[in-house]
Image (cartoon, one colour):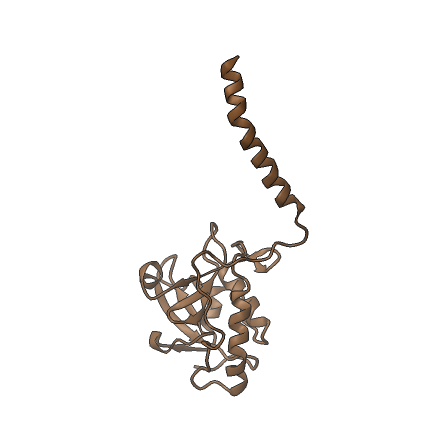
Length: 190
């Protein structure tokens, strides 16, 4: 009898907490809003600058493109995902963000790798596409450069859209290259 009362006494606060948490989750309406990934930095609004050789329209579009990409932080990774309501995979995120700013990109990473013109790692500017080999030796992952060695991307089946660095650690060892695509006017030629 004493054992049952002790277990109940310890169990009841947890039961109350679980019920309150479930009620809080169920009371929200609409689609959940993305939240920043813990520890992710948001570049200053003035940090995305014009890209070398870009038109003045493209230079003005870069901060908006970066803002659109960053607004997707916290959305879940979804294989084949290409819209906020369902989540994104890496190339779906890139395609969706660029489409919002008038640039059509193909859906697959390998096809996006063929767009625009190749640029060296030290030329990467905010809004450029950065590519990594996560499967084999060819580009199999893509994200959007933010500047300062960071990029926004949809990383994996256990992740969410987030900002990470690519100049050291995991992503640096998988670097394939970067491409610059034109904004609201097609892609630049090689």
